[in-house]
Length: 183
Image (cartoon, one colour):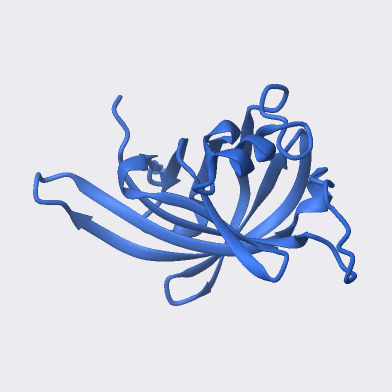
């Protein structure tokens, strides 16, 4: 009697030098763009059936960078991320479904300030390639929009003309390259 076993997931580590985690939010009448400079992640990838794959991603909240020192200090404070108390932002997948050619819906738990929400990220699998040094790479892109208030990021200032200084909707974009994890 033979039993079929599922192929093992190949474990990849996010390459932060060739990846980015960025965001955009309305500020007054324009948009502020920023990024997180420090993050890490692991992808358990099944090339035969990507829906069996797994993702775990951690961002160091203190690495926020909007190219403006005073604003970044405010974003690290208790008004926003409170990085001393809540040093990380995390995403852990709970399921993946195919949604088209190379497109997947990756559902998981997204946590900011110890507030966890279930979200679904539309992810595009960009494929695999070998870099000039012979390293195998896989790549993905994802974009989603969250409401920052659902994660306890409540600070705002009323404008004398009506409305508020900072928008509630935050667009998040990820561009990820990963390499086989070292054992």
